[in-house]
Image (tube, rainbow, N blue to C red; front, top):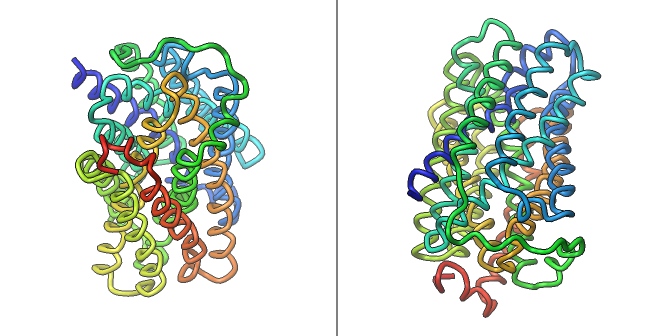
Length: 393
């Protein structure tokens, strides 16, 4: 039963999250048609991040992920995200119309990701790292789908967005087949102040700081890696396919394998290894810019694997350290602040690229992995880390 639920949940995340980067995948067409800069193009992704933060904070404030049926919340949110994304294709002729609609898309996406993690946690308490890694891997694959669509040459950007919306609608239908697992906690009382209590708990605080360092890097890489690759080795179908392989395929493999390894060897061990690898990839992006396509492609695949390979383990750590009845709220707060951070890093990378070119643009992301490494090292030495991965830390 739980394998069927996880399979359905993975399908939901793959389909629904395709709308997240649907506009980013067609940035070259939009820059030409709308005459926008790299910073303006970044705002198309940044608006989704803002919406996601707003939706997440609002739902966490009223403990929505813990008090409402996740399957209904996910289904309704998928339909809303599909509609908002399709409206960009139907009505937008510039940023003035597109940005509010992308923001609304993000608000609805907040009702898909965190509740999906709650469903997985309710079925896989004993293999939480693998389950959440699989969900994050699905999100990763879904985020790469627009680049796959773009690689096959959609005749116009509107069609690429509409395909993404159709996939999100299908996600809403699949979500109705989900159900809560045996480890779903009873519906708690409304606690408006629980979100603030999360940061008074040192182990939870360290797990969240590790996640925030990870997020400083993650979405800026996802948003800009295809443009970096085009600038470094040239554009075209091959580059779009490489972007999909790095973000979608290698990323999904990293998230799932990271979960498998973390359940056996520890959450902090995996997060430290992945943060170190992605930090080295940032340095590599400077050294290999403009090099032969082969080493650049290897760098992209390693980066795509490691930049997301630890993401589910930060969520698993919060799930194991937080008060059981409010795991959904704790996860939603973690996601909200993490995505708030991404708004800054995405814009900053775009601004540096506009000013100085792509060789140096990603170097500004290096503090993220370094901060994450420090936080997870401290958590590994904290006695509370014995609650992680059945004592594997």
